[in-house]
Length: 122
Image 1 (cartoon, rainbow, N blue to C red):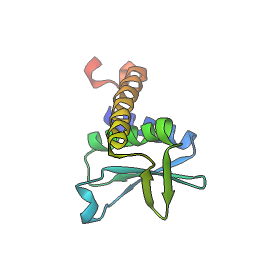
Image 2 (image 1 turned 135 degrees about the horizontal axis):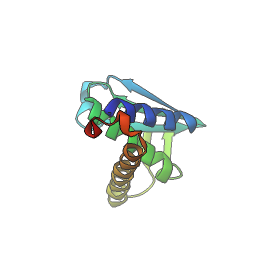
Image 3 (image 1 turned 60 degrees about the vertical axis):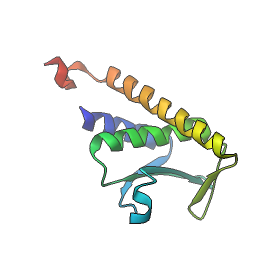
Image 4 (image 1 turned 90 degrees about the vertical axis):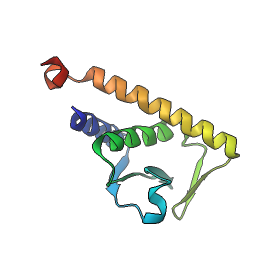
């Protein structure tokens, strides 16, 4: 079922013109980042740590889609350096909102999958 959820999330990103790509993060970023939403001059990209397990990649993709849906007007990027235009407290709120969005999005995708693709229904 997880692979179906991941596929559904990738299709959702693609419909919005966002390329979702699994990459190997440099060692100095692995502990700080699981993913990244990048938008610069209409180039929209979500990078996902390819070393994470499928469940983690699902949450990361949904979380980064949350940044696209909720925060793209606050995010500025230039030369792969992205930052929010607000203070540290705003950063935590933004991350919490993206986490909440991710949990809800995954819930609704699971709910919408046909029962014959749900191992729990067997």
